[in-house]
Image 1 (cartoon, rainbow, N blue to C red):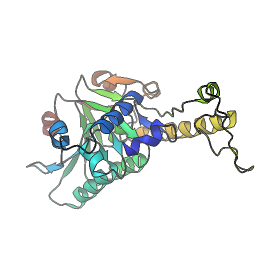
Image 2 (cartoon, helix red, strand yellow):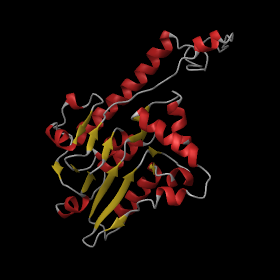
Image 3 (cartoon, rainbow, N blue to C red):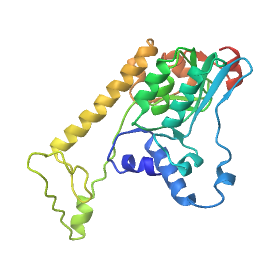
Length: 264
């Protein structure tokens, strides 16, 4: 998928389990531009408003910003679309409360913090619920809600950031290829990760600083709303819903969305 490519190539940080990102990319590459997409992936979940005025906003699939129709058809969640839906529900007098229905392993970094801020800033009561996955980028967004509810067997957490940059320098050398990178003298951080080269210590330190800063922002965002969340729960681990509740990552338990909405 276009929006995962930079992250999978190590060009930007990711907020998703690497194997799940790679699986999603492989699936998109395999089935893109065929006429069996709808049959393979079914209908995308759409926002709706319940009879008692609860707006339900799906946050399902890998999360990205500014996605193409094909990427959304393949099951990904567009931050721009979610943001627009939240804004519409905020201004709709018939909507009294808003629930994020989450089932996502996470996604890319761009736009996630801003969407979490939007959720946190809503004037109407908010809740996030999952009986599937609420991990990484998805948890960053969901944790900003007033309440976070999940089922016992759901997967919650993965509070962390990573970059994966393959080093093909030995493979290139074995093939008799030596990469020469010419860059401006005053920009030693340029060209990090060019295929066939190794990262310099200075480049590695810079990239490490980037992911550490994003992780600190992630933790700070969580703690703004989830004051009981323990630091030990923010080391990248994924927990069952029951364990996440004990660590302060969620505020309540419900077996399914219907039960969560009934108690909202």
